[in-house]
Image (cartoon, rainbow, N blue to C red; front, side, top):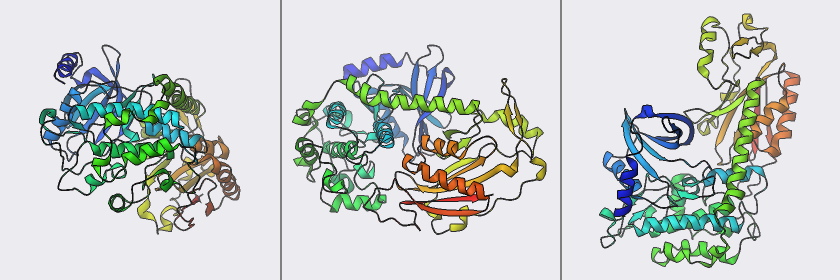
Length: 514
């Protein structure tokens, strides 16, 4: 590692350590205490990723953060995200890293599941073997140099447009011994990781601690994730997950299936590899080096396969959504974005909210252009009136206006409030969380089908439910009365949970406030 560290220190000198030298761009990742943005170095026009850690919100000590930087600065491997430099900006620590534009494995999983029926498996074995071989190479590099990553999962595996596969998020990684000295005690005792992917010895906090085999368990869970689309126990609360990991038998593909033949396309070799990785006794699990020789990886292709079959399709989806968003801006339809508090917002099409400041100052009675928000409302179950209370009356002086935008970008705002309907769609997302999708509908410049199509494009509702939502919404608009309708979802295929129209399991609720 010494030679790699020297090379990295030399390369770090080439990267600016002043925030003014970077132009921050789109958000590509978000956590409880950090945000990751794409950025461009102004002098060289080179694109990088900037991880901004809020030191005030972070419970991690400065010592642990410095360890994270130490781990990142010493890593020089094709399957590990490259770290460039770091510096403090007011209350934030900025980490400058290589940017990968292909999305995370989790992004690709979600995209694939949203495109079609993945009931019998998300990826085929060739794709899984190709990706996992690159991941285990990175894990082997970590272990060979005295590291445990401790948070191997699809969300932390990033893809390049060239098909490269790299392990990211060193936030919970650690040396198993000072300086990576493999002759020292190799056990860790800290409770770190993401519940669904945690090994039993990590959850149970055994007196003997845990070692690199904890990553092998997480690797086995990742294999299941790539086949089924989710980690085992993902529907349960964190504390229950931890108990199930300790008490239950090790997960298998069959245990994750809703019927006996659901995942029959996967071979005995693949199932055997998962079984070997998920042995309750860490000593019975293979090492990363041993896994690299596993028969399953004979099916793996080169990175061009990943670029063509995974990354390219995901990039095509992103390009399509960007094109659709741009078209919305030109036709005054809603654009969709995620705001800082992780809520979805539909806007009128302008990404620059400040552009309406002057209009608002001169026309104080104009309604806000932000008109759709999705937020987690699990705590509101049992409060049926929370989304059905009518909005306060609007001053008639604001009526008879429509929205027009000149080529110079200046807006002439006019709204006919008699043709605006306020809807709330209460529906569970793919993680089972209950969400409210609030939006306005204007009969004068859009159709019900337009609005529903936008929500499908934004993955807020499933395409199988689009026709039903369109029909119900159209009837509400035609009748023009306050109403709330609960309906069964065609997309609900989870046989492990009984449909419930009160808890909205397999059901959704559309409400209208005229």
